[in-house]
Length: 229
Ligand SMILES: O=C(CO)[C@H](O)[C@H](O)COP(=O)(O)O
Image 1: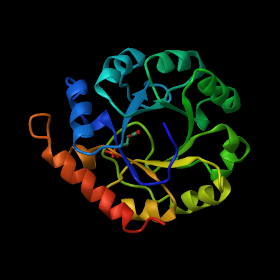
Image 2: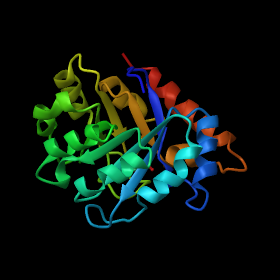
Image 3: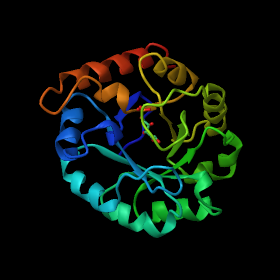
Image 4: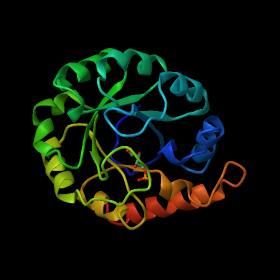
């Protein structure tokens, strides 16, 4: 996985057919997805439950590119090895998920994955000031995590602040929640390069009719690239 700051669209399979993840991952990649975003929820850190490392391992062979695993779980540390073994390229933990984010990031890199840190809407950019040399990605939540299809919360000031703090470091800024062709330009202009989108990618399509996935991905990408600097 090489670093670049071009716009990358990362469909969240939270909005896919849960009975058909393998085919859904193949369909979104064939339709132009850059990364596949995998949302792991525990019913404790967030008020919803999805799936764990066994499901990630099962879908891994169906993803040619980057498997981007977003852990909305607490505690995180006991499960890092399992998600790395499941084939995650990026493992992102929430700064709010425990008292030892430094240790968590060390463990993620130690397990051979790229390390991400996520910030809930109520958490300031300054929460990651001391760990920017330990991460490959900062995920800015633009919804309160737990569910797809929520309304975008404007975090553009935080994205700008993070972009300035990151400077020349090879660190992605990922946006997660309510991204669509209307909101994508706002976050791209502020400095984000990885755009997670669930509802806005999967709407109107299916494994048997995947063309809308491609149209939706192209619409988000075009809107974002129009403003990205
Ligand atoms: O992490 C998430 C929710 O916690 C989802 O990835 C996110 O909400 C994407 O879904 P949508 O694009 O439908 O908002």
